Length: 435
Ligand code: GUN
Ligand code: ZN
Image 1 (tube, rainbow, N blue to C red):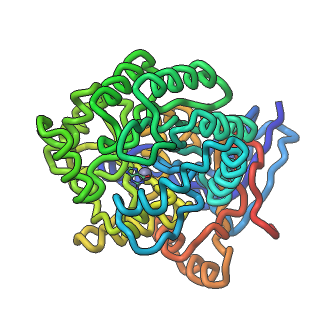
Image 2 (image 1 turned 180 degrees about the vertical axis):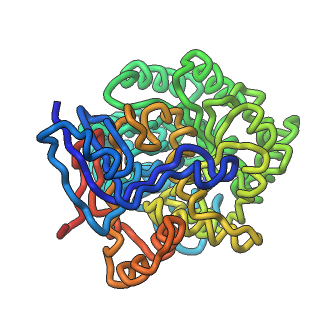
């Protein structure tokens, strides 16, 4: 088995810094050694401690001026929305009808889906994202296209066919029965292949009938290994529409709960306007929330109350929500999350933001036994960040005295140029142009 060692600054999160002491939750080795063997982490620690025990002949690549971290995890993203990014002038419901549904109609064509899937995965890797929870479209072939492309790259990805049987153009609608048959067929076809996982994916309560939500709950219950992935409480007009469509439900979360869609493997994107009571019910169920700050700001959805969500004990991770979001970069998302906090009098600790973009995402996707940090035995999905990727970054990061300062500078000043390399299961999967 090939063994390779990397000498560099290293950082990873072992726990939520909000609940553990920050010093224990995030481990930092300014001069560290990461040893990779057979696609897995063999060792992670201080160079001075590990170097003497390294088996003779192990190649060591020395990477001064770099920071190695776990690959980032995007807990909510839409691959068919690459070409919807940066659409001007609308909020959620208008935006869906004006920009998003027309773009998603094109995924009836498998060749188009294949082409966009390749662009999408390349964008994830270029931004240091090694795992993601992904919306496809209503078309079964859109899922095949993404899974095939992810399998070819050996990415750990979770995705699903969108279920929507009302409230959208005819070409984007399935039915209860075709939605069930396609979802079952996709689970059968892709389960256990490579590092892929499936998520039952009702778009949101506005575009699924009661019967379809009930079917989604049944399919999820029949396959305990799949996730449930949907949107909730993103926008005030959307929330009013859900109240109109489901008059008997106590609130938005209750709509999903009634149909068996609330559980430990459920991920709810947004929850911008969720009440404390909703966060408490999410926490009690062991469900996760994907906080998507870039999207929430661009679509004018509102300010996610991260402090309240964390206070209620809900596992919260970061999502780009491309194409509502304006960037694929989890590092940029950490900065956007900070700004959303600032507008609510909450200064997000950069170490907490780093946790949200790595281990919290792995927990949301139920892959934290495999990725999310670089503990020995985990799959070696990691990124090499170039702290001097631009002259401004070089100048500012040279002045940083702590890991928190470095991470905060990156989150405010960096873009994808900071990601020099991305590794999947120990294999180089992306190199920055010119590096
Ligand atoms: N709610 C339902 N569909 C969508 C979508 O595609 N993007 C976002 N941001 N919210 C949604
Ligand atoms: Zn979304």
